[in-house]
Image 1 (cartoon, rainbow, N blue to C red):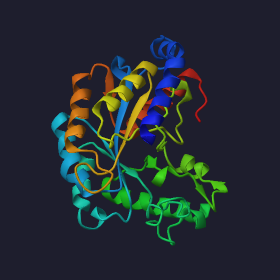
Image 2 (cartoon, rainbow, N blue to C red):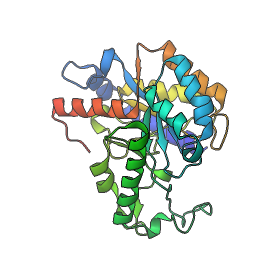
Image 3 (cartoon, helix red, strand yellow):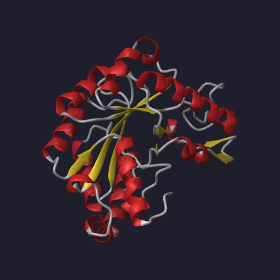
Image 4 (tube, rainbow, N blue to C red):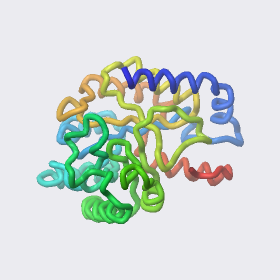
Length: 279
């Protein structure tokens, strides 16, 4: 129910600001997405999971859509399926960083699965930055790219027992970084260092469509956060994943679907053109 409460709050915010945000999205002097689209859409997948290679990637390819796969340096598929990830990148999909060891705050509720070694509370900024740079080196060896985006493990942005933000590190290293909060923002309020995202794994197609349409009303970006697709964990059912892709293709005149890197690079260009400060 938590996800639905977040979505309801987000939709309420959009409704209250609807007139202003829609005007900004379509005004000649305002923010524009390519091809006259009402909203941009990013399909993102975390944790280097096998079901992403076996299910999500083929579905994306069949529909002619591009996604972003946020890979962990020590993820299981990074041992024996590197060539598969190289093929994903060669097909035009993005390989983003999801850190080296997926560190999270062990002291929070239901975090027994976080190892003592990779507890963000005992990390320093220096250690975190070094691990992110190692991950970038690994990903560069796979796809040859030198600019990258990032997704926060567990959506967390602090080290040293919650006392120190590492947003300055991610701002320095990455074009943009994806978070986990589904709040819908007007384009001018878009956060590049912690971009909102919506998790469709609850299995409710209508809630997913409502999120997409609310983003279109606001003229903003809709970012989907997924893990397993019909497998692994935090699963988005294969059927629902296909329905999401079908909806996007059926409405391709309104939704510009591209990688997180391409979408956020375009957004940065619009911010520069309009003289808006980048958060």
